Image (cartoon, rainbow, N blue to C red; front, side, top):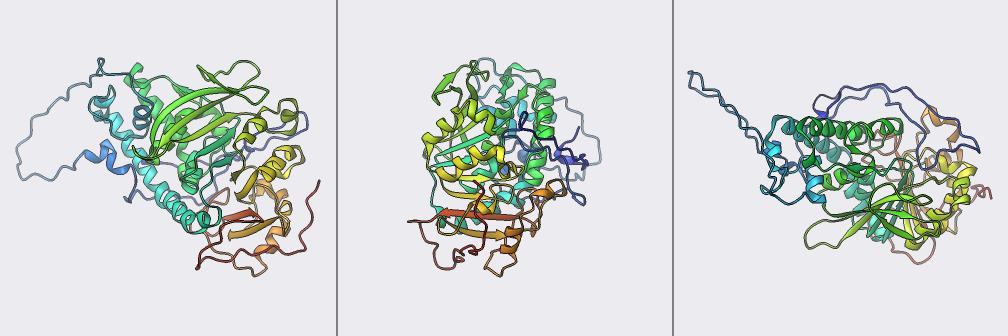
Length: 456
């Protein structure tokens, strides 16, 4: 099994499922199982991280060479003892335990953090997070503060469909949103409380967690096929453990977890477990805050099919999401599903209910953003698509990037073309009253008037 401390690059076989009108993938991406060649592991050189100093592994001081030559008597460490009389672990304790952040001494799980297997987990996850923070998270936060926030402000709602449990990228770009709505086909999942598991199952569960998040922490997007397998292997199943991990890695305090179901009328119903009643779309809501004095923020994950056929038979998803409008939409590594006619309903929803859309080229085609309706700013470089998605190459988008418009570079990678210098982002803001960029930012270039009209 792979761990971050000794990560060996696997080559996944490219696989793509045929899509038909009768059987359509919904929120889930095409199964892009290829990691581009030439990838090397990240350096584990320490950088400033919101969690590195809290890692139990960071508390283990390196042993200096001793001038004493006589052997030191071996000391057998005492086995860890769970504090059975301590309160049941909270959602935040579970999140901290998953990611290797220190727990208070009174926690039932605190003593486990001194075991060798847990220290190995803590070191591995800390190293993985430092790499992600250095390569993506901190750069995305800085870019958001200077280029994104001045143009869109602080959104109340962020719609991030087709991203599964990838909360960490949305949080990097929109750190102050009140509500995040994530969607995918991956199961909501659940966690057996860690204090109810023995050490062997805990170690296996934490190893599975590292495997489930390894690709996104290295390349900033999930591989759908791997998620289907990883999410069912251990006692930490589905999306929920990933959400808790990303919140904790991002330095947040988890305040509460609540399962819910959305019925056909679009009403929110609290449920007691991840399996929502028949006819309801299952989901989980996680409340969190940045600090004890910060306002509560919420991330919703909903498991649903967003294809036209599914939404026609059950419009609950869009009915419920509309209650949070207007929002800002974020689309990344979206398998180009919104290029297809059988995702036109959700595409129309996002165009109508969003006051701004931030996306890479795998989101909504550029032809759906006509001048006069949208002000569009382009970033990075459009270097085409992966071979797997060659039919979705956008000639009109390529012409814009080659037109000489002032396009600012990106100092981080994103999407399927994750290497710096190959990634692109497009920010579309609806025309009308909007905050103007401060001096020093690039102006908002208008698209060439020759862009084709959207297909209706």
